[in-house]
Image 1: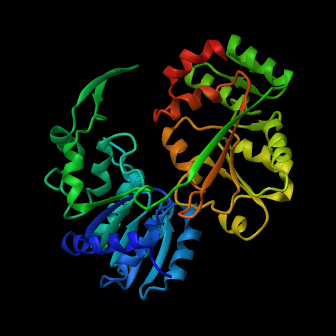
Image 2: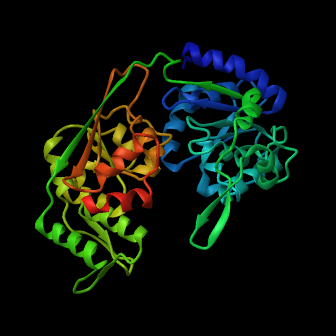
Image 3: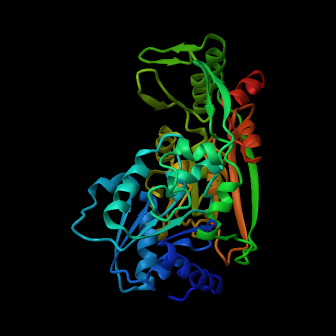
Length: 410
């Protein structure tokens, strides 16, 4: 398998950085070939065993790239949630951290970052970090991505709080229990410090010319759903024969309405159900005999889709690529690390509150040779989905503050 010219250039540029510092951050936008570039670069290092850590949904596509490339080293591909299963009988000369931004929680280090740090300290490998969005919400997210790497530029700071005193404009914010420190305003010095270790590359740099067409399709809801929604807004509780829908806080009301506008609900006792699969029926009829990817948010929405599509739907990329079935993916788990190049369109059953989810998931069909991406959003009339959409397209997360502003119009 041959690399594209820009991938060869990245390999050529990145190799000396890896040899000098033993780590490199490839900040390459989605669909520009981060995986293949990093695997190729590793083949030019003294690597016998490579550990590739990724999301579960992405394992299949990484195996495909490895088989096509046929490097001399052996590879272990594992998802972040399974890192505790790693045997240290094998020494890993190189570790590739896919979607590295997920390691960037702050001020406290998340479990994922701790597990990765433990592996790096045991094996002392070359480390390649991959992400199309290294710091999607704040530059402060960089510290715990690289803190376990020996030559990282912040190594003089033993913890995030020490790092923050130099690199973060620490502010105060008010929460229900009082004022707390807000570390979200990381300054530009973080980016400057990472420059010697980072190669950035965009879709535009790669010559991508894809045009993304988005269309919003609005549906009416049934009287049953409308009555439940109106009662919940008024009384903050709906009591049925067996279950209760409770919205005794602003966050719960926002979540319950978000579910109901797409025809499902999770009850107070933890059970959930499909009230009306009207969106699934509409999607099936509109895109009949077309191979599409459907993104959903709540797990009960998958049951709604399955109830209509029957055996015409799958949930794994391998099956999608090798059959005439459409695929249904949960937005957060499917927004990164996979290719939906065989889909003729992406259809959103619902929308996530996260701007990151919006920008990453809508790009899953993009390839170097594709000219058009068709995206369809299935919203309800007077529902919450359109208000969320207006927020996330401006690269902001939809929050309780937004919901409280919009509630009167729902």
